[in-house]
Length: 429
Ligand code: IMP
Image (cartoon, rainbow, N blue to C red; front, top):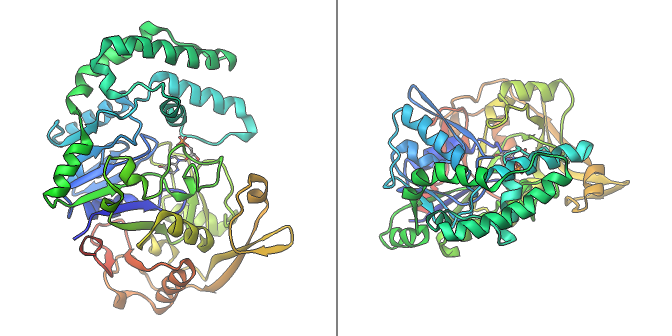
């Protein structure tokens, strides 16, 4: 029996929510280890629709949810989310939600700086969610972050706030944005402290106990490898590492606890925000994928850019992400297309290349090389076994496996939790 770590292999929004929910029902503890409330997914359980951004999905299934030290926590967003799910009938208590005491906070200065910088970038904007994720991570590595444990020490908070304000107000003023006063930030922290502190604990210690007791842990990644700050399409990335290795450092367990790494890949590709996207479609097929796949951001509502499956990028994500097997989602969105294409390489300045370049200029210039195959007319929606899939759809899945050099261990054929074809149980690996 193993733990399982779930990561996205494209640019996010691969349909992780459904897979994580399905796996969470079989786990004891679900851990978020990076990102913040820039992530978002919708879980449908019976009549209830839960929209989660920061809370680990396991809470919906009555499991223990953990927010690890690798997450940046916006306390106000967290409280709003807790209030929302509580109103929907969930019980969130310090027994069911553990938050790492060493997790850094997102403060109002971070969101303000994120938005002011994006505005100043003009055409070169990254397309961030504007939620302060980047500035909060910057403060963490600059050793200036206010962490949850600091809330219990007014004397520490006092000098830390001076340092935070000196840095951020200088930048905000330079960008022509409103600055903050110490009183404003103190009032913000005073409001959230009594609600936040009861959840804070030594997550690393509790997870170690859980591991020793043989409890099943599911690590729930946010965003995806192509948005990883090192391995993604930098600088059009998020500010955390999204690969599976971070499940360990972002929650305080050793690398051997990461277990089976399930990479989630959509049967086509989408991206929100700016940045290179070689297999992007600008035609009617792209629009069809967007409409059928309901491709609108959960967090920002922005329409997602759509394109064909890029096997080169997913192969790379599998390698750097340490993927043991792939969960392929939304295959049904391709039903009825006459022809389907897969990006198998690129052309850069007249040369054929089989790997995505690192420099942004080259990334923007690459042209996709597509391999095409006939589509299928039958519906795959709701299929629960290979036998129910049209031969051409099976060929498509097999070709993807070959190209990305990783097995498809799970296939999702509709948003319904049970419309899943399981080839291998990741927890039993
Ligand atoms: P940030 O994480 O808000 O700094 O945004 C940086 C980039 O990551 C932008 O292109 C966002 O659209 C993208 N991004 C952040 N979170 C998600 C997500 O959960 N799904 C998809 N894209 C995301």
